Length: 180
Image (cartoon, rainbow, N blue to C red):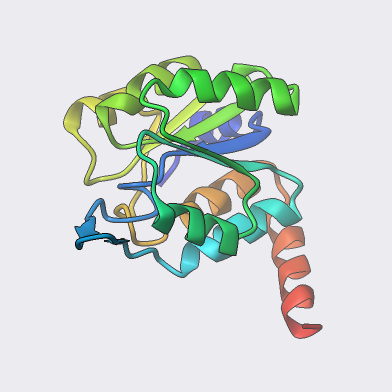
């Protein structure tokens, strides 16, 4: 559970940026001769949609290039996707310029050593229980959900609740679903 101090810090966030492998997935990659397979949790679609309905942009940065990642993020209609960035700070700089946002307004979710430089620079950093210990040590908060189990939903709920808009956005979501 997130304490009052963290919720206050979280309320200042204007964009969510996340790693992919180990956050949207459990980190497992199945490789065949010419194909790569990953499993993604369906609940992350709900998380990205809740953030979208709250006008909070979502971006993803991956050190790897992956057609499976491209397919899933296209399906979720995510426009800010940066793949092949081992130095994720370069991608973060592009995101900050595009959205005209300062680093202190960024929430970043990561699980690997390559995520630490970004986690050190942003306003709020989150990791997952199955992350490296050193990465969790840099995080402001470690989620209850493991990577690949709907982490984005948990993060979206906390973020929207910290801003006092969760019920309003949830009702928008219900209306959107019922009118579909």
